[in-house]
Length: 146
Image 1 (cartoon, rainbow, N blue to C red):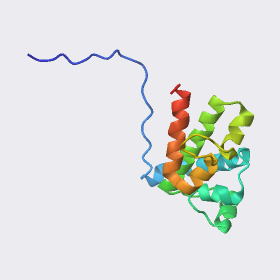
Image 2: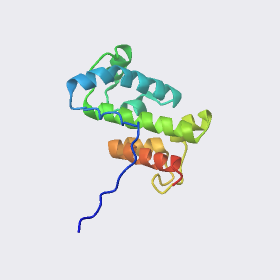
Image 3: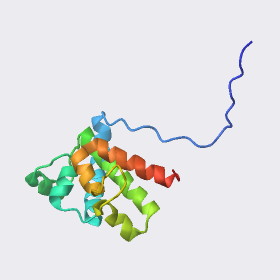
């Protein structure tokens, strides 16, 4: 006796193809806009330069100012991934909260057990990429009503 396979309804929806960040061409295509987006996000969040540099994985001060002056550069996988998480966090905050609170949220002390009374910014700076992923998941879960 064979079990019938579930039949899924047909749909016009097709997910976007996954971007291969190992591909130098894909990173070259995304790097400038990712960097410009990060600079805009850092401005909206009123990040201090040293905090913004740490969110990017510990960029030197001289490199930071050079990147701001000349954003046409190839980012590595780590930095594009960091920026992707941060843009997702920014978007989720603006869906969940009004613009003012959304832009202040990462700098406000938070009683959620994840943050332990610290700010989400401090948590992400100390925890790096994995902490950014956790914050993104938290906000996505809130968006989903969890």
